[in-house]
Image (cartoon, rainbow, N blue to C red; front, side):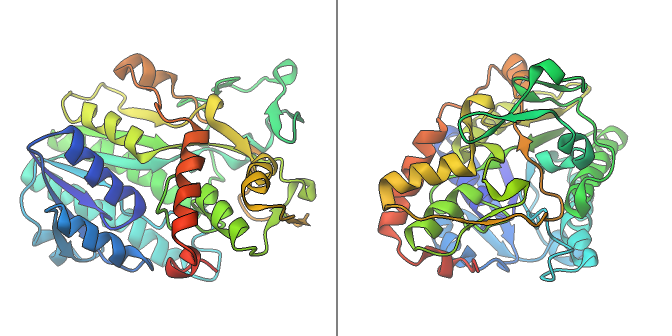
Length: 355
């Protein structure tokens, strides 16, 4: 089997390539990346040692996509992954759309021409910010948690939000580009008869991630804490009670490996996440860091930030029922892995362009 991974020099793309090689003997992996992200060159070297065939190219350029070799499947891991993209002053809305939607359309054209299957790595941020912000939460052990007595919203339970949760706007410009990519992927697959899987991923975390405050938050928090960089609890009273769940790219690779061997169901959208058992607040994460690096107090910043939400945990029940899939690596095991990376890689945030 020949696989093409877009964004292969990013954290997720490079880890998928490595883990899929390990669990799928005989797979031949090709990759494309524009190397815009600081630090991505480090992954390029590691991939070359694994025998991955790499193309330096840009998915926004149809000519670069046309030059790619014919493969059986495409795993689309290329994106500007920040929920603040398009409004943060670092990228324009047009650039965001070109990266996240136009690039996907070019890859879908590749799949149409080569009859290749398509796996889209989407995001939890396709869900309605308004609906998420209105979920009833209460504080318990320095973290927001759902209040089941007041819960009246469809698509959510104590296990987290499921695939039926509202995707009504606003979802952020970033979320809109990913949701539009999902729609186009399904339409292309149905129209031109090639298989499509859509994985709405929770927060991915692990050693070697190019963390920033807007993405890769678990890795960023550990490295910034160890380096005594300024940390802030933004919004929601400045207490750090906001909660996310996380999972490891090796667990994502196991699900993708299973998908490559099956025909997708009529509804190909699945949550891939850490779930409620692997969720943590920033305040709880700080306490974990304090025990290992010494005390470092984040400063409260009560000003709201666009698109922030107090609680988002992804329910992966559908993936468990369909694939018998659950994350094998606990959040604490992931944090221990990142901790080891912090100890052996001082100055990591500067290498990957975090400010």
